[in-house]
Amino acid sequence: MPQPELDLERLVREHQAELWRYLRYLGSDAARAEDLVQETFLRVWRRPFEERNRRSTAAYLRTVARNLFVSDIRRRRSRPVFQDLDEADAAWNAHAGGDGGERWRAALTTCLETLTDRARQVLGLFYGARRSRAAVGREAGMTEHGVKTLLRRTRSKLRTCIERKLHESA
Amino acid sequence: MRAPEDRLLELALSEHFGAESPPDVVGQVLRVAQAGRRHRRSTRRWSWAAAAVLLVGLGAFVLFTGREPAGPEVHVLKVGVTRFENVPSGGIALDTVWGRILLRPGTDAQLNAPESGSLLLTVFAGRAVLADGAVGAGREVFLRAGLPLLEASLPSADVRATLDGLIADVRQSESDLDPTSPTYVEELRRMKTARSKLLALTEERSELFIYILPRVLPIPSAEARRDVRDRTLELLARDPRLRAARRLGRELERDASTLETETLLALASRGLPGALRELGTRLDSLSGWPRLRVAAHFGLREDARGLELLREGLRDPLLFSGDPDLYLATVVALERLGQAGHWRDAWARMRDAVARQLDAGRTDTARQEVLRLGYFHTALRAQQPLDLSRLSEVVARYAAKDTRVLQTGSDIQAELERLGQ
Image (cartoon, rainbow over all chains, first blue to last red; front, side, top):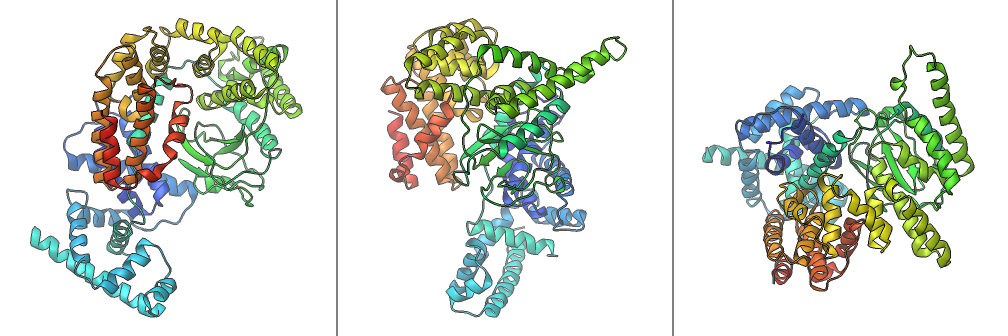
């Protein structure tokens, strides 16, 4: 039976973004992730659920979401992004920490500002506009191989920068 | 296979550069939660097998006798659940299965059980009705369908009587039958005969499908029943022969007690007095938001029946997020009844909601919210009527118009301030 005392609206507002990002990370596309987010909240609402603190609530929601995700890919016979979901979860927990990844994303934003204009342009075209490497190359005046190399180096640089920022602020 | 850290980074980059962003599902979750409460109060029992058999036959027939689709995305629907069978290719494809179904006209597609689980896709009045027994009855699934509208008229009274009898037999659940009863076999045979007869009838006359479907399906019939109402109202609006339109209106009013509340609201909004009388008698027997909707209808006509319900409705913590159109209609109704101050409170709540949207970068959503508020502001100031039977559709159409004047966050906020005065 649903918990009438549960503030469903607040629960959804506080956790929907992180839950969606988690499902995208596990391998759902954006639309399916949105549906699974809805389903997760409705399942939680219908069962006895005691909110203790934000962190444990987030972990519980991710557990429910993960179970729904697994049922979904089994039903659709899709290939999962990760073979080992436990390992994927561990990586997520390390990334998200206790704040759903807010500090991590803030560090990413800062690190992006340290890149060259060209690197940011290439990232924007590839990840933002979702162009192919060849199309990015044409627009940026580079070869496709050059784009591939730049993307690889830039991602590596960003990972190093983010780690450093998180370490500095810890 | 990518390392987890790489995947995290790439997704974050997609989000940072605007390719995608976390959705706001608050409204949808609250609406389904509320619908789930209403469904649990229902005491009807349905035969899933009967519905599935009927829908397979009806769906295949209706699906392939429709006109060519008009466009890739026409409607966003809320539907319920039944059963899935393979449907031959012929113009329907599913991009996703649960929650979002995009129907692309003209594509050669297979709806295979392994891809979509257990779903039945039927065309009802030109819109896709999706069913999935594995998900559970009473769920809302949002669809976009690119299918044409089918034309149909209400069956005559004697045909309706025949159909009602058959539908009653089909609706009966096999589990209701007593296997130890001497009449068990006879009742089972009657149930199965009724299904065959219904299928045969709808094969002869496809318009009967529109009458039958809402009476056979469970929760999805709320959407289907609204389609019956829409068909009827379109007939009333379009029929150039006034006598026929009046006759149809009288016929509907004679059956007012059997009509759904939504249908009655639509008819009452068009001035049919029988529908208004019936709504008055139902006010105490309804509950939840349907009851509030009826009370709002009276309030908008400056009829104080249901005044306490309106005040109580505004105290429902789910209403503002779950059904903002009904919330604002309630506010306008109270203002028309001389209960001043509610518009200012509603405006303040909307101002906070819009501020949250703008802070989160959701300018489009903020724009839609302000345009919605503008619609109700106009209705309040100009004393315009509000059709509560199709409020969300009308508001969405109004909000879709003329968005060019609210391009930026500043435009949106300036318009919001104007509406608060």
